[in-house]
Length: 208
Image 1 (spheres, rainbow, N blue to C red):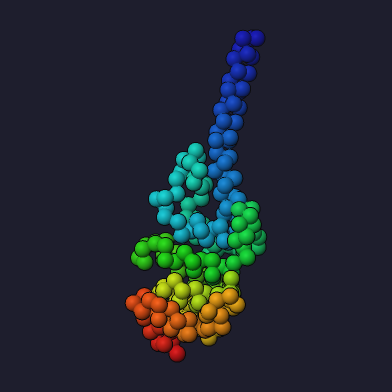
Image 2 (cartoon, rainbow, N blue to C red):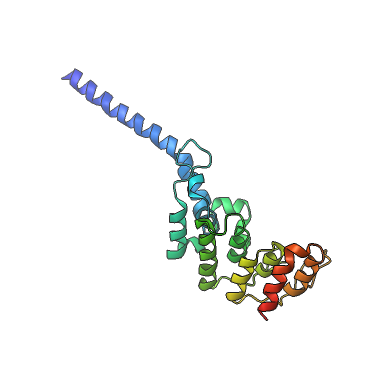
């Protein structure tokens, strides 16, 4: 009887120890996911990651307990990500950047035909439909100014289609182009790199 109780008790302890090891192994991955993906900014980053570059292994420092497709689905179907700023983004002061500006800076990091880029433009349209400002300033620039600066024609076109205003001035007192609107900014940049900015200027002129 005593031996049977001892063996049963030992089995319970073994199971508890195994469960504890699993929990401790998974905790960093789940904590990292919650800290980084508990707000719209962090989820936006996850949503446009290459799925093949998001490891499953809990021991990998870059692993997450959420897949990019799930992050995109959460952003486009729920309001709660927009109601808070998670721990990681708070530490990086990421939530001070308007969401349109935030996702826009990532739109030239992948192949134009990739699922990541398509999700990025999907989020851009979704944020605009939610009422996120397409003319919000960040570090003195609006998204249109940033699209011009990055020479990203597709991003610029998408912004103009969403109602972004190319006539707003740049607010950077320490720069030669302070006060320039997007048209003047494009001309200014084209004088320095004609090949790179001709298409940008043409896109702006076509929107008038």
